[in-house]
Image (cartoon, rainbow over all chains, first blue to last red; front, side):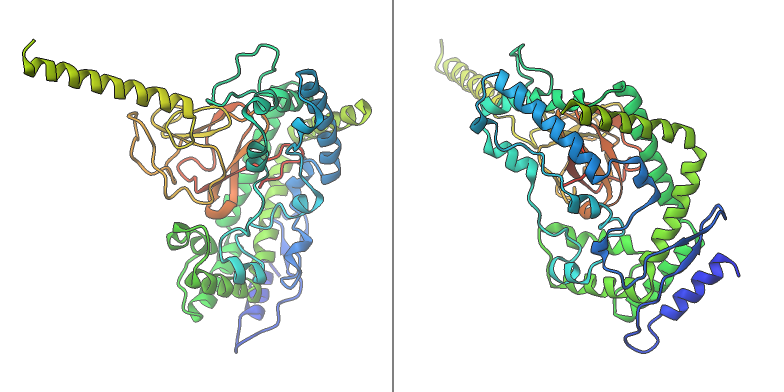
Length: 304
Length: 140
């Protein structure tokens, strides 16, 4: 049985025949390189559990991020104190990345996927604290000049005792044990693999079949879109900061159709398959990049 | 000096003064959306290599639809959404992440701190952007 047939069957089983149909069980999808079967999460699984993709191996984990973050924070405090800021003037600092944020990093990759979020916010991201804005607004111009190296008129500081990018900029530069250009090259490669896999998945017949099933389900509810991102990007939603009634109703139907057609497990498994394939094609470069990340983490661990 | 010439001179002085005042206030305010690419801003450019007209943003934008390229360069007056070719990040700590879809959805291009690049995946397909911590790279 081919992968495509497997998915077709899964999608057919999942199509709403009469009203509500139970979500399909896990969907097995053959990865495009034929190397193995990717087990996708069940459509009924909580999105909060957090999707992982193969490229996540080439990003810092939450624990690694905490190690680098606390090392950087210590450097910022030392730098700012050396430039005359006392403890109260340094607070708050924008090091707020937490485990939940890392686990949730793919939550909007396929647009809205959680029924409660859809009902409350439509296609708009749920309101979250803008940590960066809070950080800027909590500091005086003189404090920001030391912390980020920019004066109130937006120009780079002329004080030659303040490093480029201020104490925050200097702290993130110091975290780079490797050359900046090697790190950038690695980031660019990860970004390119991510984009190529996304577009390969969008052109894959298994994903196109799943989109067709989703589109038919949406049409049954009175909404006409060829693909999920067309619904997300409907210009009617993006004229205001909050969702109106039409947007909420469309998003609720969208998430219900994603769930009943098993769309996201198929889509993410196909995308994961292409990521694995493209990672394998650049394995040596990606391993070298991962080694640079590991060096950064171990340097930050021993620095403490 | 004839009354007409005096009036003309006065008008010229008034115009000159207002130009000076406007000029001074626009450099001193450093507001976002003013067409100047200043510190702490993400600037999107109409052309590759940071060329053409630009729009400067200090804070995240869930959809670029309301914004147009500013100034008098190539692309001035054109919509920013799905029309940017390159980007400059003038923040020293945060990475700017430019998304293919509205509301921070879909794939994205990262613009690291104090750097500029031509957009890749989001070239002429930029719908939204957010600021991200570097360690680990999480946004919002």
